[in-house]
Figure 1 (tube, helix red, strand yellow):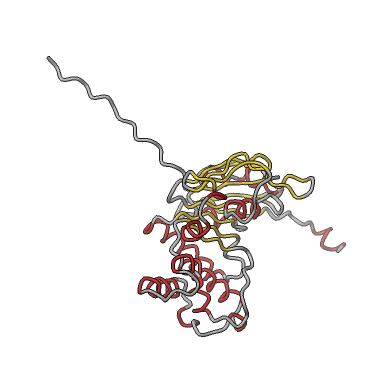
Figure 2 (cartoon, helix red, strand yellow):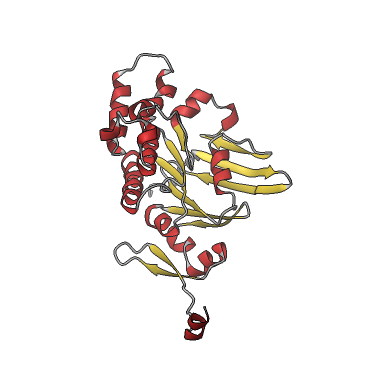
Length: 283
């Protein structure tokens, strides 16, 4: 008698680390987020793109529990974020806004130590694991040589890297960043995004970031969400989202999109209108 064919077992889908359901966030009569729903699996590297006023920063603040939606729910590991212990939430999630602020006389090292408060408390003695996390963050963000400098003495790029180090010292499971490359030159932009990619691959860090540069988003993120008017217009891998038609429609500007010869990732190039000789002479 032939052996019975075993019934295939289907592994349950992993619980999303972060999930938003039917979010509505309004400022006055205007819905900035209009019934938006999406979820993020553990270990994802996602970039959110869209024109100014599309709701990108508002979405990030709602996901970070800094903004309570008028309707809808945000869940972290299956639990409503507003019912999660604030300290536990702060241990596992770090949020870096567009223009973070701190006391101007605070040193870089003191700032980075603040990232450990959710783990040890404000006045508790530092433990070896705290010191190790701070040193690791200072080095990975390349600000270890600035540790004794006050924030007021730093350039915009140096200050941004110091805040990145503070976020990393928390050793979060999930990192939310709003335009993290704004104050960085092109070299430090690539360095930062490369660091985030490395932490995502090697440590399983879930990264969700708002980026202004669509080409950078396509180069580093594995998933891109395109927002417009508080709703998701496109959501998927870069090669599916970053097309000439999609980007032109999203931003209202004519573009060409080429494949990077080294990586195959999309590269966005705005189309420059041709100027006639008569127009030049008449200007």
